[in-house]
Amino acid sequence: MTAPAAVTIPDPRRPLLGLSRQELAAEMAAFGAEPFRARQLWQWIYNRGATEFAAMTSLSKSFRERLAERYVVGRPGVARDLTSLDGTRKWLLRFPDAQEIETVHIPEEDRGTLCVSSQVGCTLTCKFCHTGTQRLVRNLEAGEIVGQVMVARDALNEWPATPDGNRQVTNVVMMGMGEPLYNFENVAKALKIVMDHEGLSISKRKITLSTSGVVPMIRRCGEELAVNLAISLHAVTDALRDVLVPLNKKYPIAELLDACRSYPSANNARRITFEYVMLKGVNDSPAEARELVRLIRGIPAKVNLIPFNPWPGAPYERSTEAAIEVFGDIVNAAGYASPVRTPRGQDIMAACGQLKSDSVKLRRSQMLQQAAATP
Ligand code: SAH
Ligand code: SF4
Image (cartoon, rainbow, N blue to C red; front, side, top):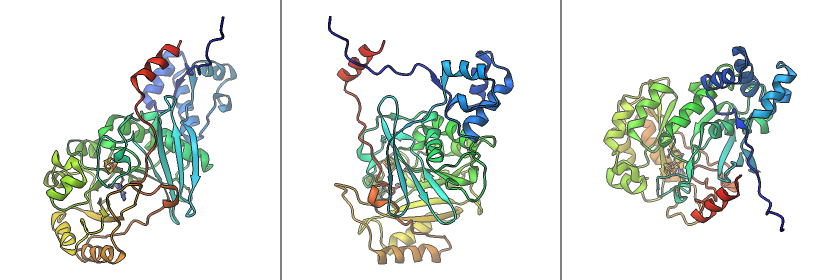
């Protein structure tokens, strides 16, 4: 008889990462643990960053052993870890189904921002975005989203997670791969975990969700999460936005701006960010800058100008510095802050719009093979 082919047997134990507080409490109740155990576990996982039950010394040894038989804490695997010359760091994370995503840490003088992905790839096909050339493979689960913050804190040695100014992960932006409002349930669950005061404790004021304009979900985002909102506007006419951000055909500029006007957490202290990628000769004229300020009048807003970041085969070029300056000055003179986003981590393809993983949908034949190999 020939020996069976080697197969990796998936870990049957359930990961706790990504369960809401209520779900963790229910899971522990069903497991027969006293109610306060769920809270202790929560603190070990999200405040202390424990990755093994054995390290959770306030729990009895026998309880820790029982937990380890049934559960794992859970972490995405780090497939690649790159650091840019400018200090930006990018992790390629791999999940048990072999799908991959990227997470980026951008250190600055007064803060550190973690750029988190919400999907493997993206169903949308914005013309200037590298991720948009990748077919959507799937939504990320809540544990895979919060797992990105955990991996960054592990790598940067940031446990326990006390909220003070000197940390390297002070801000979270949902600006990595994917459209977060097309995966709202999982994004919302993950961000509630990230905000929890007994855990990672990153305030909603330090979290920004960027959307290409999924109008029906914007209100829910404001009501349920009250995080800062960023809108990928990029054009001031529907004719051009239809081309750059094809979702505009479904939710045109006027509807998008109406949703911004009624965004529950927008006020002068917490303004909506309009992101505007600067594409040479496409959307960067002074007339377009004037039209932009006319469009957003009345919205507490700032405009973030993003010099286009190239990627292999991209159909656009970056605007000249002079064009970006003129554009920014017009917006600024109208009373809106118009910072230019410095491209970071370009040498490791970590800048805005450059993220992409090689994940592709498994062919049906491969899936059948895998299913047959699973006991
Ligand atoms: N899907 C969401 C969030 C991810 S993209 C969204 O579209 O808003 C984060 C920001 O980078 C968006 O404003 C996006 O339009 C911008 N972006 C995409 N490709 C880019 C590129 N090549 N150069 C500069 N910015 C880009
Ligand atoms: Fe998707 Fe955002 Fe890229 Fe558009 S810009 S393809 S919505 S990730």
